[in-house]
Length: 129
Length: 199
Image 1 (cartoon, chains in turn brown, purple):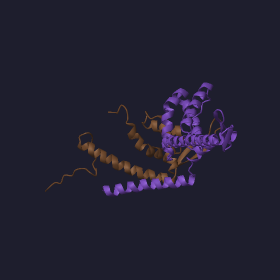
Image 2: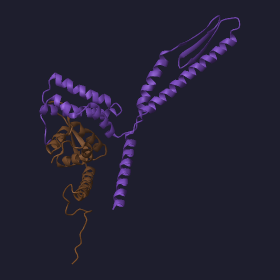
Image 3: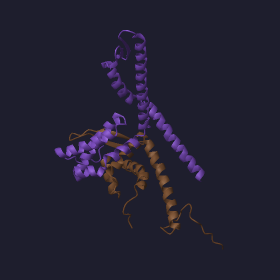
C-alpha cells in the first residue's frame, strides 16, 4: 500500500540527512538535487523545499559550495559536504536507524507491521527446559 | 569536476519575465536577510529555474518551486538570524512619535507664554530653533505661530531612520558565527543528554 499524500513533517525531519547523503555521493546544484530526490521516490516534493535545507546546512558548516561559471547563462552553485557534514551524516544515519527500529517494534506490536528480528525493545520469550 | 550539467534552454522573453518576477517576489520578501545572501539566492534561483525550464517549461518550473511567500519564509528561517520582531519597531516608532509631538507642544506652550509676558502693548515674535528648523509664535492683536522646516531637518528625519533601520539589525559576521556555534553546541549537548538519560 502506498500513502496518497506524504506528511510533509516526516520529510522535513529527514531531508537534511538525505541531502547530505546525496552530496556525499557526488556534488550537485539545487535543482539537480531535487531531480535526484524525485528519482529516488520523493516525487511530490516541491523544488523550493531544498533551498532552505541547503542554506541551513551551509550556515552550519555541514556543506560548502563553489560557483561554476557558465557561458550559456548564470553561474551554477555546486554543493559538497565538509568533514563536519560527513560526521553529521554518520550521526543522523545512526539516529535514523535507531528510530526506524523503535517505530517498527511499536507498530509490529500493535499489529501494524512486521516486528524486526533484533529490535531493542522487542519482548523476549525465555524458554524453560 | 562537474558531474552533471542540465542543459539550460535559451529562454523566451516571456519565460525570462516569469522567472525574474518570481525571483523579485522572493527577493522582496527576504528583505530582512543580508544582501549578500539574497544575491547568492537570486543567482541560484536564476540558474536552477533555467535548468528546470529545460525539463518542464518555465511555467511548470515556477509552479514546482512553490509559492514565493513560502520559499521566502523558509529561507528566512534557515538563515537563522534572530532579528528584532516587527512589533518592536512599531512600538519604538510610536514612543518616539508621541515624544516628538509632546516636545513640539511643550515648545509651543513655552513660546506662547514667553510672548504673552513680553507683549504688553506691542507685537512680539519669539523663536526657538532646533536642528535647523524654527518654531515661532507672534503675540500681538492676534496670536499666531508657525514652523519652518529646513532641508537639514528633513534630511535628518529621513536619512537617520533609514541608516538606523539597517544598523540596528546588523550583527557582525564573527559574532553571528560565534552565536551559531554556541547555539548548535547547546542543541547537541541537549541531544546528547537526552540520549544518555534515555538509556
